[in-house]
Image (cartoon, rainbow, N blue to C red):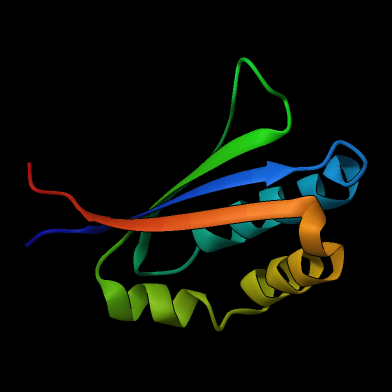
Length: 98
C-alpha cells in the first residue's frame, strides 16, 4: 500500500513571518496526532529563512481531505488567507513507491 505525500512550498514575506510561524508549527504538531497522518515536518531553507517546505505523509487522499477539515488546519489556512499576497503556497501530491 502506497502512502500519500503532500509537499507544500511556502514563501512568506519577511513582515508576515512572525505571524505565520506559530500557526505553521501548531498545524504540524497537531497534524501528527491525527490517526492517518504519519509525518508532518516543517523544513526551513538554509538560503532563505522565509522559505519553507511542509513534508506531510498521509495514508491516502481521503486522509488529507479530513486533515483539511481539522481546527488546526483551518486556523492556519484562515491566517494564510488573511495575509493574502504576503504568502505563496504551492502544494504538490506524490505517492511513496519504495
